[in-house]
Amino acid sequence: MSSDNFELNNGAIQASTINGVNRLPDYAKREIYARIIAPELLQRFNLSPDLLSEEGIDLLKLYCPSGSSSVEMALFHKPNFEDPILFGHLTDNLAGQVHILLYVLNDPESPRFDVDRMPDGRKTLFGTRCRNVEAELAAMEYGLAPGQIRRGLRLLNPAIRSFEVFVKSLGHDLYFTEPLYYHNAIIFEHYGFNYAKGKKLMERIQIGFGSAGDLIKKLDYSTPFRHPSAASSIRKRSWAIHDGILGEPFTNVTMFKHVGKLAGIDTSSGCAW
Image 1 (tube, rainbow, N blue to C red):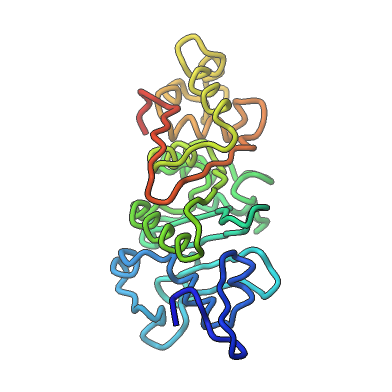
Image 2: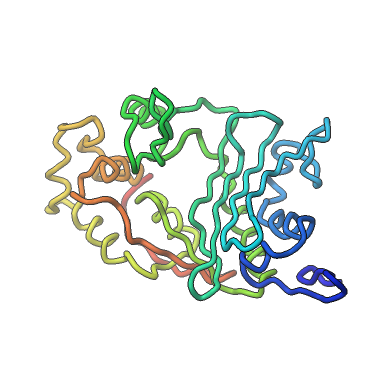
């Protein structure tokens, strides 16, 4: 039995989409989605390959009902911890290719900032529905970028390698992602992604933060997120954009990557993190 075929009712089923995987038996779905998890992540937290705790508790949570074209997965480093070390939300696009809606790596040993929820518990949807400004300020001062509830794990390179193993196992050599924030797009550029749409916006932002640009003039201390130093910092630019300096939300940016290839795109030349 190959890694892509599973015996079901005496017939071989090959999954090439998220929807297809979700129609497989639970054991098959788990085996396929576990390919997304980088071995380095397991090593970092001394997790067993079966993704069970020492007490036998399942550390991998999957929401991938049959009939659905999306999957949400959360991997925890120990039972009952508040946040996963990996959270992913994937879906099929209209062409049946894998599209990453959200992919997060959290360092559970770092401080938590409640940018994802209001003091009364309402979810902010990472600041897109409403904003916990006090938490955002604390996160920015700590050195985080918009949307981060904790420091990252600095494992994106092995994470991308493992994700491409998953993509290849579905028979694809191309996949897509939708960066939620400006800094996400820049990071994806550095890891070889190109733009399906949104490149002109990224180029406009680069010009806007230039010495004669329209955005640099708005770095006027009017809010704590609009410090002049944001002009030369990807992270601080992202905070200013999240704060509304563009006059519109950062949306309609879609990126793609060919497995094993680098696009060589750079829309923030000369700008440090």
